[in-house]
Each structure stands twice: as C-alpha cells, then as structure tokens.
Image 1: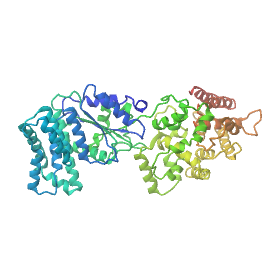
Image 2: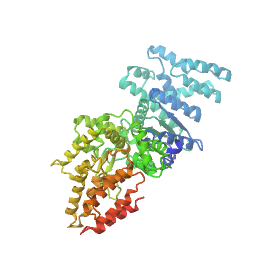
Image 3: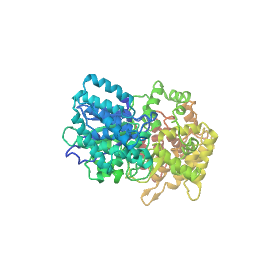
Length: 628
C-alpha cells in the first residue's frame, strides 16, 4: 500500500522546515496538515518521511492517535516526550516536572501535596542495575507518571547520574514553572481540579513547558536539523486538542518574546482541522487555498499564512492519482470513474483487472455491484445527497431542491469538513470536465467526482426518483428568472433510456434549432463557438442507461434514428454528436475513450453544412482527434 500511494513530493517542504536551525530560536515553524480522504496515502507518507529523516539520525517522533483508544493532551505530551528523551536523548526537565505536578492527587491537602511531590522527585544518590529493576516495579504501580519514573530509571542506568545533578534539574524546572504561574507550582493542581477553562489553561502550561524544553535543547548547535513530530489520526479528539493547545502555546510564547521552538509538526487528517480559519476549506470560496503537497514549501507558508494563532497552520492537500498512475487494463476508465481518488482507483483496478473488453468491464461493475458497496460509510443525509448529485453543482442543487435553508447549509458545511467538496471552473463544469486553457474565471462548488458517481449510481437504482429529481432540476432552469435552456436540456437528456425515447428527439431538436440561429456572423465573427459550448453543456448530462446491455447495441439504438435515410442531414449528424459525446464522457459507456474519433468525424461532416464556421468545427474535430 505504501508503495502504491506514497511519493516523495513532501521532500521540498520538509527539507525547508527541518533545515531552519540557524540562528537558533529565530525561525517560526509550521504545523503542517496532510489533508485527504481515507486512502489517499497520508499514513504511507508519514511512514516514508519517518524512515527518511532517520538517515542521518535526527530527532523525530512518529505517533498514531487511534480515536478509539482515547487520550488527553497530557497523554500525547507524555508519549512524545518519552520517545524524544529515551530514543533521541533530548532532555525535557520542565515537561517531566510539569507532568509530575499534574499527576498529583488533587484530593490531598496542600501539605500532603508537597509531601507527595517531594516523594515522587526523590532519588537515590546512585542507581545501579540491581536497584533499577526495583524502581521499574514501583513505577508500574503508580498511576499517570509511571512512564516518567521508568524514564528517570532509564537515564540513571545509562548515565549513572548523582542526586545533586537530578536536584539541579528539578530546581531549574520548578523555577520555570513557578515563574510561569506567578507563585506556587501546586496551584497547577488546583487549576486542573477546577476544570473547564482553568483546566485547559493548565494543559496549555504543560505544552509551553514542552516547547521551552525543546527551545533550550536546540539553543546549542547539537542537532543538525529541527525536531520532527509526525502525528497520524490528528483528527481524533486527542489530536485536535493537542494541536490547538500547541498553536495557542506558541502564540503566547511569541507574544511574551520567547525564542521560537524547533518543532516541525506533520499531522495527517481525513477532515478539515477544527479551529482552523484563514485558509479556504476545499469547496469554499476563500482566496487563501491550501496548496497541493508537491507545491507546498516553507516560503509559501511564510508568505501566505494568517495572523495570531492562525499563522502556525499550514494545510496541504494530498495529491490525487495521476492519469496513468496504475497498471490497470482499463486505467483511463478507472481514473475517470474515481476522479483520481487513490483508494477507489486501487479497489476498482483490482476488481476489473481481468475484464478483457468493454462489455466484460461493465458486467463486472453490474454483477459485483462495485459502485454500491464502495459507498462511504456514515454519509450525512444520504437521501438528500443522492438528489444533489443530479445537479452539476452544489449551488444549483441547493436552489432547486429546497429542503430547508438550514439543512442545506449544515449539509454543505459537513461535506466540506469531510473533504467531499471541491471547486471547479464554471466553464469546465458546464463542459463536463473538458479541459480548456483559460485565464481563471468563475468557480463553483461541486461534489467530489467519486462521491457524485456513487450517489448517481444509487439514484439510478430508483428510476422513478431519478426522473423526478431531473424533472425538478429541468423546471428550475426553465424558470423565467433562471432561463438556462441548455441546463434544462441537460436534465432532459439525463432521463433518456433508449433510442425511441422522445426526450432524445427534444434535445436534438433544441441543438439543431440553436445551430441555425448561431450559424451567423456576429461582432467577433461566426457565433458557432457559442453553439459548441451549448453542445458540450448538454452532453455532460449523467445517465441511467443499463449496465447489462451490450455497448455496441446500446450505442447504435441511440445514435441512429429509425427515420434516418442514407442521405444524412444536419439533424442526424447532431444526434450522433450528442450520443457520441454523452457516451465518451462516461467511462462506463466508453471505457477506452474511442468515441472521440466518432465525435471528430461528425464535426467534420457538420462543418460541410455550415455557412459561417467550417474552420471552427474542423478545429473542434482536431481537438478530439488529438485526445489520447
């Protein structure tokens, strides 16, 4: 799996962050979020990074926070600090001391708390290997701080430190905590006992202690690179709480004039991080958009980051699988079906690897009900989402399929947070994803192509509802205040199921009529490019054509009218153009994409019938002929 999904596009970003070590304490460092749906290679990327930064050795911790296990900010700090101290010999006295204080029994009186603290900090003058075993046994019996006694034993075994050295370390840590609290260190126990914001403040001081320890450890040029924390499942409650506490602590330290800490965090998340603002969540219109991993750099973060606590965040989107990224026989179809979503591409690639031709490809999808069983779990309002999938974009779905403004708004926000929304240029959306060179332009919010494909497949299993939803969308576009005839025709075509369906004749008649109206000279020459855009918009419609019917017979029944004669006219050419592109845009109807050749042929035939735009239609033909 790691070999399939992970790549080294993270290298420029991590290199830039890890090498910002001189002068020490002068470089602020980001909290990097690797954002992507499940199965986009986030864990594999963290593993690859972990293996790479260890050569040569560099302080790094790779930590997975499984949501089911449950943990607190203190638990996360303990696990990170233990690995750094035990494996990388990083001294963290303030962190250990603060954890010990937080581990005291809040039910005790102040004098009892003082005794308990002294007892837990008390050390023998020298710990030899025989004594160490006894200390391990004691540590295992003590709650909360047992791991830290184990750690202290480990250090004593390794370095054979004397009591006075340990006392000096404790005095330094106690002095720092006393200054931070403005008084007695035991006040921290009471703060945690009170709960709420006071307990949150206590946890924040623990994170500050950790960052101060790291800053002091890197103050001398002992380490060639900054400290790296790799955090998987960062969208777990513990991960969210820890990272929010981290950026809040950094902001407090920065305002207090403290030196910058050397911690580079790379966190993997399947959802948009809670509390992150300033960056545009995918599918939202804000200007500051997260870069793709390959385009992310330290300099980009410095230039585009926000203010205050928000300036530490750096969301980065995991890459999709590029076209040609698998060795699947039907690689094009799989890529088009999944929108480059790695997990889905792998699943379908494995399922379809033995399909030898187009009909067998379709038969596997039909018999294995692949598109039904791959539906993501726990989708919000799945019934409503199925209806939304009929619309080209989310805005039109909201406007046409009213289900309560608050419901739509909440659903849209939840989809965005789960990374199931994305943005697309309006022109690309109208054309069905056909890529044209452009200088930007209007963008719209759309469902992730894989999710939309699955939802449409589920909707198609309910023919009556399919027709009902598309009829509703068609009526919406025919309203006087909307007046979008091409989008209305799009939803008319979506309801066509066979060659005798009169709705196909309606669509062809609409495009034929518009061809006659636009085959004229306007201010900028022939207006036929406008017709091409209408044609592309209409033929981008989804379909519920049967999967269990041979493709050739299905195509012929739709592309050729029973009324056609040997002498073809413009209507018959446009009909074939409509059906050919309708099939070509759906990888289930044209897995290898061979209908592009027929589209090109029909454009050349149609060019002979125009009075103003023969060269325009011939250029369209050339574009399809060049398409791989």
